[in-house]
Image 1 (cartoon, rainbow, N blue to C red):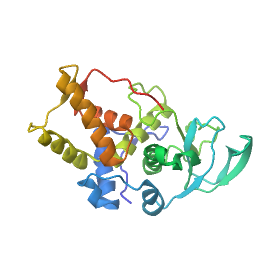
Image 2: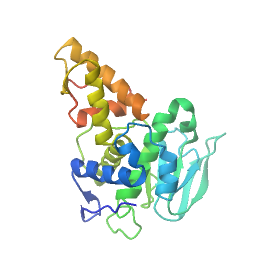
Image 3: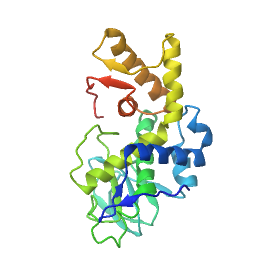
Length: 257
């Protein structure tokens, strides 16, 4: 596994730029799945989590309202999950290195979200183990008031939100960004970007929404192409393209489910 090296806040949250996170993601993909670094493809997130990171995946309904779709345990403990039939809470023992995933994500139509949620939890393991360590005196509690848990809300799979007012917001945004960078590494994404413009005999350029009907069409088509080639949602693909300045201009409102 590629070692993560950076500086940390007093609460052990990484100080790192998004460009540096992209570089770290490329190093991890190069080490784990080298062909995925340059050849656009859906990454098998389950194999990555289980065999590269050595984590254990369990499937359980984490919350009755299904607002939480993924969770990582950074130490041994007990969490409350929802009974699949009644929704009633019940204790669920976990060991260090357990990733819990809501079973609804295993449905075919939810596979892009499953892939993103798994890589989000993998990102926590890669860069946030110090923040969620039980011996961190300034660690913020998780969803279940257990400091050693990191949980992923299921309403969105990637956020444009710029504000990072709390450690929790910063941690979740870093995990979202790294998950996206692992699933859509820059070198492979550049390949798709160049191929897209080659179809129209144009030089690659930033697509500016609102500049013309052509650019609006290009933004839609490129987003769909990236989502298909990498096996991610259109929302995740679009926000990744926005963050890399491949698509700019007016922000498109997308559904959060």
